[in-house]
Image (cartoon, rainbow, N blue to C red; front, side, top):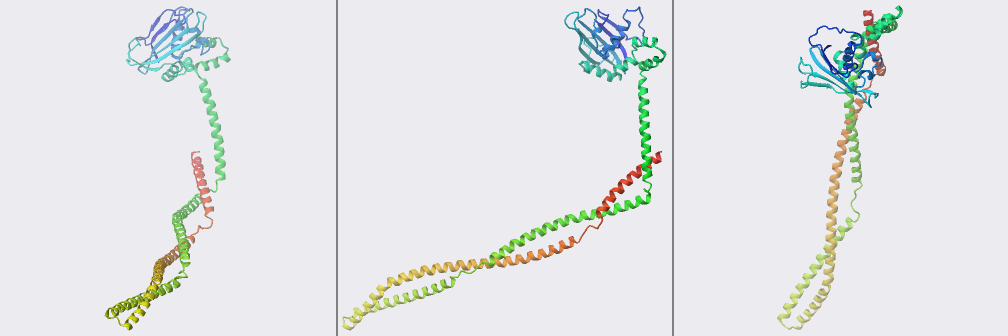
Length: 434
C-alpha cells in the first residue's frame, strides 16, 4: 500500500483543513519537534483505513480522533494498491456540544477510474462500500492485512516500542514477538506438534492393522475376488429370471380368473331347463287347430245346405221339398245358433294358439341361444384349461430354479472380502510409504 494524498479537517490536533501530498515521494520522513503532529499524520492514515488508532488503547475508541471544541471532523486518504488508486474517507461527529459523545457517522471506499487521479471533486469513481463495517472489510481485502496485522507490520505503536526499550531482558522477547507477529510461528509450532502427535498415533494404528491383516495374502485376495465374481454372476442370473417369473405369475393369475368366470357361466348354462308346460301348450294348440277346422267345415256344410234349400224352394212349392227345406232350415238355424259359440271357441283357441306359438318360438330361440352359449363356454373352458396347463408347466419349470444354498453367506463373504481387500490395499500403500 502506498499513500498518495492525506486530507485532515478537525482530526486530533489538526483543527484546520490540512493536506499531506505524497505524490512525488518514493521515500519520506516526518521530522519536527515533539508535539508538532508527526504521529498524528500516521494515526490519520490508520484511522482512515481501519477506523481506529492503536495508541488509543481500544479499537472501538474514537473520542480522541476529533479535535477539542470541534463538532465535526473528516479524514480522507488516497492510496495505491497494485497500480490501482482508491479513496477512503471517514466522518466524525460530536453529539450535544463540546462534552458530547464522539462517534463515526459515515464512511466510504471508492475506486478511482483514473489511475493517476487524486479524488478531486468531479473525478469519476466506482463506489465499493458505504458503511463502517463494509469499508473496513473491503480495506482488509485490498491490503491483505487485518487491523492488528497492520499495526504490527506497518505502523509500530510508540507505546509498545517504549515498553520494549524499558522492559526487562526476560520480557523483551515476548514484546518483540508480539510486535513482529512472531506468535504466529509459535502457533505454527504448536500446530505442527499436534499434527506430529496425530501422525504418530495413526502410524501406531496402521502398524496394529498390518499385524491383524497378516493373513491378507495375494492368494486370499484372489480367492475372494473369484468368489465375488461368481456371486455377481449368480446375482445377475437371478435378477434376469425374476421379471420372467413375475410375468408368468401375472398370466397365471389372469388365466385362473378367466377359468373361474367360465366355470360360473358353465354352471349357469347347466341350470337352464325347458319349461314344463311346453308339451301341454303344443297339445292345446293342436286341439284348438282341429276344433277350428271342424267348425269351419261345419260352417261350409251349413252354407251349402242353405244354398240347396234356397234352390229347391225356388223350383216349386212341392210339400216334400218344402218340408225338407223346413228341416234343412231348422238344421241351418241350429247351426247358425251354434255358429257364434263355435266362432268364440275358434277365436279363443286362436288366441291360445297364437300365445302358445309365441311362447314356443321364444322358448325355442332361448333354447338355441343357451345351447350356443353352452357350446362357446365349453370351448372357452377347454382353451382356458389348456392355457392353465401350459402356464402350470412353465410355472413349475420356473419354480424349479432355486437359489443355491449359502448365497446369503456368499454375499456376506463378498462384502467382507471387498472391505478386507480395500483395507489391505490401504495398509500396503501406507507400509510402502513408510
